Amino acid sequence: MQAFTAKYSDKIQGVLSGFDRLIFRGYLRKIGYTAGLNSYLWANHVLLKDFGSPANEISDRIKEAALRWVQECGRPIQYLPSSKDDKEQIARSIAQQDHITEGPVCALTCVEPCMGFDIHRNRETKRLELVQRPRKCLYVYQYWEHPVLGWLHARIQTWFPFSIQIGMNGREWWARQMERVGMDYQKQDNCFPWVSNWDQAQQLMDSQLQANWPKLLDQIAGALNPIPDVPTLSHAILLGHIPERVGYRHRIPGGGSPTSALSVTGASRHDHIPQSGRVTFSWQTVPGRRSH
Image (cartoon, rainbow, N blue to C red; front, side):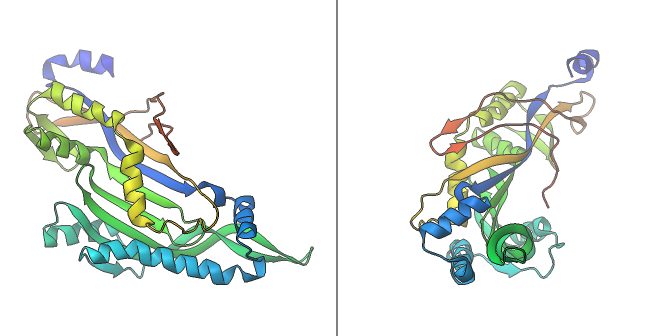
């Protein structure tokens, strides 16, 4: 990278490095594996033969809670008959049509494949077993124009173990940062070929590394699953946010035209591990790509 910028230094206005698209997954750690869920069922006096009834009840409560906040904000909820529908495009069309610049945009629901828990009858032992295997369940997708992070989506699997996914774009976040400080810029799709102050722009991008990630992600996760006793009941269960994909890119605006720019995807590593209370992050930069 340094060799490239040195070779074409007379044609480069500035170099910007920062997050592109980020995908986080959140897990309920104590019920994310078979032994853990078995312990949860035992602690709550649920026999394997009775698993279906309480599991369906909790699933319905999760589903209703994840949609309630969107309903209370007066935003639409739409069921998608196919998991192949472009949820991003549908949500952005709704945001554009309703002129949404901040707050919830919509909720989309869809039946999709997942890894979930079921009860299996072992023919050899002739006993019921709790197993984790591929199945299908309803997912709830929330789309937001977040006041800090900009455009993002958050989804929850409405069947045990109720995993969540949060997807955001560091460039959307960065644009809001520049607007907040009154900095001018030009934007083309997900690229910024020109900004009025290169040094300050990089400082804003660097500040994303110091963000209070637990607070930001817990706020979003809380809107997906706002019920304090589900699915914990008598068990205390921690939610951990683990970055699945983190895109990190270098932008090199060309000197010949304010609309020309080169994008280089990096694969460097951030060795710091931000920690706060019950959430721990481990950062790994890999090529970013769209989540759906």
